[in-house]
Length: 161
Image 1 (tube, rainbow, N blue to C red):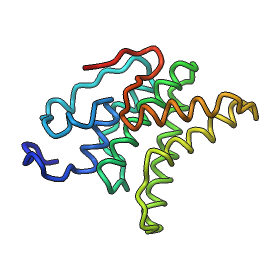
Image 2 (cartoon, helix red, strand yellow):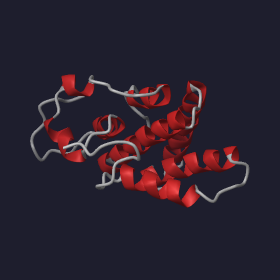
Image 3 (cartoon, rainbow, N blue to C red):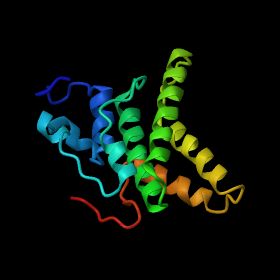
Protein backbone atom coordinates (compact mmCIF):
# COMPACT_ATOMS: atom_id res chain seq x y z
CA UNK A 1 0.00 0.00 0.00
CA UNK A 2 1.17 3.48 -0.76
CA UNK A 3 1.06 6.15 1.94
CA UNK A 4 1.59 9.85 1.48
CA UNK A 5 -0.23 9.93 -1.85
CA UNK A 6 -0.34 12.99 -4.05
CA UNK A 7 -3.53 14.89 -3.28
CA UNK A 8 -5.34 14.12 -6.55
CA UNK A 9 -3.71 10.76 -7.30
CA UNK A 10 -6.06 7.83 -7.90
CA UNK A 11 -6.97 5.88 -4.78
CA UNK A 12 -6.01 2.22 -4.64
CA UNK A 13 -9.26 0.17 -4.62
CA UNK A 14 -8.03 -1.87 -1.64
CA UNK A 15 -7.39 1.29 0.41
CA UNK A 16 -10.82 2.56 -0.59
CA UNK A 17 -12.38 -0.77 0.43
CA UNK A 18 -10.56 -0.66 3.76
CA UNK A 19 -11.79 2.87 4.42
CA UNK A 20 -15.34 1.86 3.57
CA UNK A 21 -15.32 -1.21 5.78
CA UNK A 22 -14.05 0.98 8.63
CA UNK A 23 -17.12 3.18 8.15
CA UNK A 24 -15.24 6.29 7.05
CA UNK A 25 -16.41 9.05 4.74
CA UNK A 26 -14.75 8.88 1.31
CA UNK A 27 -13.03 12.25 1.75
CA UNK A 28 -11.00 10.87 4.65
CA UNK A 29 -9.19 8.30 2.48
CA UNK A 30 -6.93 10.86 0.82
CA UNK A 31 -5.50 12.16 4.10
CA UNK A 32 -5.31 8.83 5.98
CA UNK A 33 -2.08 7.39 7.31
CA UNK A 34 -1.17 3.74 7.79
CA UNK A 35 -1.94 4.08 11.50
CA UNK A 36 -5.47 5.33 10.75
CA UNK A 37 -6.22 2.13 8.83
CA UNK A 38 -5.24 0.02 11.84
CA UNK A 39 -7.70 1.62 14.28
CA UNK A 40 -10.71 -0.69 14.47
CA UNK A 41 -13.87 -0.11 16.45
CA UNK A 42 -16.88 -2.37 16.28
CA UNK A 43 -19.74 -3.21 18.59
CA UNK A 44 -20.52 -6.83 17.71
CA UNK A 45 -18.71 -9.92 16.43
CA UNK A 46 -20.05 -9.73 12.86
CA UNK A 47 -19.35 -6.03 12.54
CA UNK A 48 -15.84 -6.67 13.91
CA UNK A 49 -15.22 -9.42 11.32
CA UNK A 50 -16.16 -7.01 8.57
CA UNK A 51 -14.07 -4.17 10.03
CA UNK A 52 -11.01 -6.42 10.34
CA UNK A 53 -11.00 -7.29 6.63
CA UNK A 54 -7.80 -5.94 5.10
CA UNK A 55 -8.64 -6.48 1.44
CA UNK A 56 -11.22 -7.97 -0.91
CA UNK A 57 -9.73 -9.44 -4.11
CA UNK A 58 -11.30 -8.58 -7.44
CA UNK A 59 -12.35 -4.99 -6.71
CA UNK A 60 -11.18 -2.71 -9.51
CA UNK A 61 -12.68 0.78 -9.01
CA UNK A 62 -12.01 2.79 -5.86
CA UNK A 63 -15.55 4.20 -5.56
CA UNK A 64 -17.16 0.79 -5.97
CA UNK A 65 -14.64 -0.72 -3.55
CA UNK A 66 -15.37 1.98 -0.96
CA UNK A 67 -19.14 1.48 -1.19
CA UNK A 68 -18.72 -2.31 -1.07
CA UNK A 69 -16.76 -1.87 2.16
CA UNK A 70 -19.43 0.38 3.64
CA UNK A 71 -22.16 -2.08 2.69
CA UNK A 72 -20.23 -4.90 4.40
CA UNK A 73 -19.92 -2.82 7.56
CA UNK A 74 -23.68 -2.23 7.56
CA UNK A 75 -24.40 -5.91 6.90
CA UNK A 76 -22.21 -6.89 9.86
CA UNK A 77 -24.12 -4.48 12.07
CA UNK A 78 -27.47 -5.90 10.89
CA UNK A 79 -26.31 -9.47 11.53
CA UNK A 80 -25.29 -8.47 15.06
CA UNK A 81 -28.63 -6.79 15.70
CA UNK A 82 -30.40 -9.95 14.55
CA UNK A 83 -28.31 -12.02 16.98
CA UNK A 84 -26.60 -13.99 14.21
CA UNK A 85 -23.55 -15.95 15.34
CA UNK A 86 -20.16 -14.94 13.91
CA UNK A 87 -20.22 -18.05 11.70
CA UNK A 88 -23.01 -16.46 9.63
CA UNK A 89 -20.90 -13.37 8.98
CA UNK A 90 -17.86 -15.53 8.17
CA UNK A 91 -19.88 -17.60 5.70
CA UNK A 92 -21.21 -14.45 4.06
CA UNK A 93 -17.67 -13.10 3.67
CA UNK A 94 -16.47 -16.40 2.16
CA UNK A 95 -19.38 -16.48 -0.31
CA UNK A 96 -18.82 -12.82 -1.19
CA UNK A 97 -15.11 -13.34 -1.90
CA UNK A 98 -15.93 -16.29 -4.17
CA UNK A 99 -18.61 -14.29 -6.01
CA UNK A 100 -16.36 -11.27 -6.56
CA UNK A 101 -13.45 -13.35 -7.82
CA UNK A 102 -15.76 -15.27 -10.17
CA UNK A 103 -17.28 -12.02 -11.42
CA UNK A 104 -13.82 -10.57 -12.01
CA UNK A 105 -12.63 -13.69 -13.87
CA UNK A 106 -15.61 -13.52 -16.24
CA UNK A 107 -14.32 -10.16 -17.50
CA UNK A 108 -17.77 -8.69 -17.95
CA UNK A 109 -16.38 -5.20 -18.33
CA UNK A 110 -18.22 -4.13 -15.20
CA UNK A 111 -16.66 -4.04 -11.75
CA UNK A 112 -18.29 -5.41 -8.61
CA UNK A 113 -20.32 -2.78 -6.76
CA UNK A 114 -22.19 -2.29 -3.53
CA UNK A 115 -25.40 -3.24 -5.35
CA UNK A 116 -24.20 -6.80 -5.97
CA UNK A 117 -22.99 -7.08 -2.37
CA UNK A 118 -26.34 -5.94 -1.03
CA UNK A 119 -28.26 -8.22 -3.40
CA UNK A 120 -26.24 -11.18 -2.11
CA UNK A 121 -27.16 -10.22 1.43
CA UNK A 122 -30.81 -9.78 0.49
CA UNK A 123 -30.90 -13.34 -0.87
CA UNK A 124 -29.69 -14.54 2.53
CA UNK A 125 -32.11 -12.22 4.32
CA UNK A 126 -35.10 -13.43 2.30
CA UNK A 127 -34.12 -17.10 2.73
CA UNK A 128 -33.83 -16.70 6.51
CA UNK A 129 -37.25 -15.05 6.68
CA UNK A 130 -38.79 -17.95 4.79
CA UNK A 131 -40.48 -15.98 2.05
CA UNK A 132 -41.75 -13.04 4.15
CA UNK A 133 -40.09 -10.28 2.18
CA UNK A 134 -42.27 -7.43 3.47
CA UNK A 135 -39.30 -5.64 5.04
CA UNK A 136 -36.84 -6.38 2.24
CA UNK A 137 -37.27 -3.12 0.38
CA UNK A 138 -36.67 -1.02 3.50
CA UNK A 139 -33.57 -3.03 4.42
CA UNK A 140 -32.19 -2.82 0.87
CA UNK A 141 -32.82 0.93 0.71
CA UNK A 142 -31.16 1.52 4.08
CA UNK A 143 -28.10 -0.51 3.07
CA UNK A 144 -27.79 1.35 -0.24
CA UNK A 145 -28.15 4.72 1.47
CA UNK A 146 -25.41 3.91 3.97
CA UNK A 147 -23.13 2.27 1.38
CA UNK A 148 -23.34 5.30 -0.86
CA UNK A 149 -22.09 7.47 2.00
CA UNK A 150 -25.19 9.61 2.06
CA UNK A 151 -26.40 11.58 5.03
CA UNK A 152 -28.48 9.02 6.91
CA UNK A 153 -26.54 6.80 9.34
CA UNK A 154 -27.48 3.24 10.20
CA UNK A 155 -30.43 3.00 12.59
CA UNK A 156 -29.27 3.32 16.17
CA UNK A 157 -26.07 5.19 15.31
CA UNK A 158 -25.17 8.86 15.32
CA UNK A 159 -23.87 11.11 12.59
CA UNK A 160 -20.11 11.45 12.68
CA UNK A 161 -18.53 14.74 11.81
